[in-house]
Length: 274
Image (cartoon, rainbow, N blue to C red; front, side, top):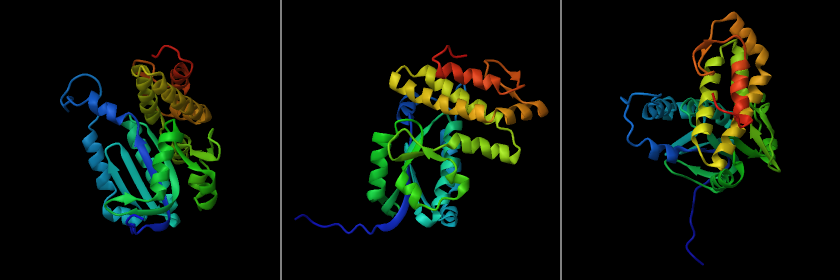
């Protein structure tokens, strides 16, 4: 019998493991890009990373009751099950940050034993990594139904956990949560819709691999569904507030949700991109 390992893991921890899809290819593609390049949108990714890690400082992590580790294209957030709501709080924030950078997330939330200090290991993480690779498939975050039943998740997050196409798994509907948040605050969601929609459109158009196109087509459909569900609010908001977008290919004043609907339908239906 080989040597035994004392792993000092804690029971009943929630783990979010998220992979930034396409990050490795983006690194290869953009290795020669400088902040002073002309033409197109330059995303200052080191600055985005710096702001995020400064926001989630050690003190703020302690306040939330979480631990967070971001290495390359992988993000790990953990907490005792009593602090599960903080996992969804960070998930919402990080997903929005990555979408605005043109990078989608795919991840898994699990429950189990974990060691998380400067390094991280444990069955909960192993399960999350394996499920992200083998089950999640699309840009989404999934979790087992048994974990949904076990965890006391605040209704503000629980209402967005729905059944998925994977047996015994649910998925978290970030886009609906995001748009509901704008609506509940009486705020403008068209700026985020423009950024999200055009990022999905660019990725769909520029990626030649059918397997990659399928992922962005799936994401476009989720975004389209969310737009349709919030169409009345969007129409009322742009009617009362002057909002502009380049979603149709050139800057124009928005008068309804229709430009977003048309743009996303073309992706979903494999039409010609604007």
